[in-house]
Length: 589
Ligand code: PEP
Ligand code: MG
Image (cartoon, rainbow, N blue to C red):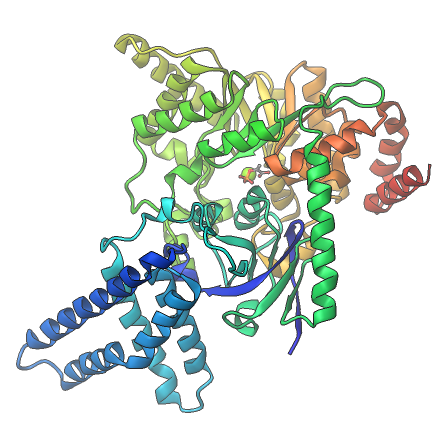
């Protein structure tokens, strides 16, 4: 039966595909297709993993001390029985043979099917056996790691090589930002999560992938079943499972329209972003990894306004990237940008970007009781001086290869700037002593905390440039957790207090002759282009996929008409209505 679920639209367009349900703990399982010739090999890997786990369990049983509780041996027997259960084996094989999934993916897909069957059982004892199946599958997944197959990164490339397959969309309860990066290289053409807010980092990475996505769709992963046909409307925030043929046809039509629109916008990529009255505007890219540099160039970005380096630090089991590894990544980004400036932000972990996938309790332990207000971003870097120095040295070294700027996240105190400048000086002195080359780097700060916006005049005494992180500025001004879907309706970029802070920051930076940019999600949303321009902003940084749409807006803007608009907006209780009327009037002309 057809089913509609409402969530938040976070990445535009329409995706239509079969649902792949992925449990949060298993999102980083490699998902890739195997070609017809490799199916037998994949089935063999599965069989091998099963034999290995059987051996492991038998050994465990054999080694149980004589006085061990009888339940332990019984439990191992249950696990052995589940492992040898032919339905698990044959159903998993069917995913490999029928859908060409790799063994790990097939196994986790089958686990999702079984988990749901267990959840629906009336008998409590049987329901609880779900945990046993999960444990057995986890053991098999572990056994599969290292038993061949493509490495997770390479795997997903060219994933849809074999013809005739249906497109796939991912449905998960939640996805950690670090795991989202895996999906950048994956097979999915759209995705839905139960939790998350519009500017949660999961949503941000989705936008950077430029695939339709809906987050905060509450019950989606419970209501949608493995393999269901699903429509994801990333413009409206609607997910439809098992759509009727008429609905499906309507969405296929919209999908074609939006592809045509994309192709049309793409043609603007080499056109300079200049307003009708001749004002040039700088359109920069936000990137999450050095590989995104190519997309930035392709989209016509004139530089990188924000390189979120924290993604290099995630999911590494505590083994953080050292100076050389970071240097390689930053240099690759700088070289990919072919002489255009690259703004490298020092690591911004904490809040909804923990280094490892964590439970709420672990998160609290690591980053404080309230991670968004805890040891995050620059605070974390300053509390880890050795790590921070390595990052600064790596960035400095990359500056020998092109134009590099350093950007500091979440500044709230002048001392955070001066301590960083001291650390930077130390790093430069060391490099000089070692005879290692580096270039000139400008240092800038992100304005993301209201306190910083309110003392921008003082901050400007210490820095070369400013970038406004509206995602956090809104979160901290309105006291709304950006990742919490329960309060997402209150997350309001149009709030007069937010607009006020934005205007005064842009105005003071411009008056002081300092470069100022916006790199939060507002920069890539055409609804805000004119307002930000009216405030005097001439530099916007966004996901490469958003650049063309913003450029189109700029090409149609006449800044001489914006002063009156801004006056109206700044005194309005509902500024959004004013801009809507303005746009409607302009469209009517
Ligand atoms: C922001 O807060 O607006 C920003 C760009 O940084 P991030 O989204 O990575 O927190
Ligand atoms: Mg931020």
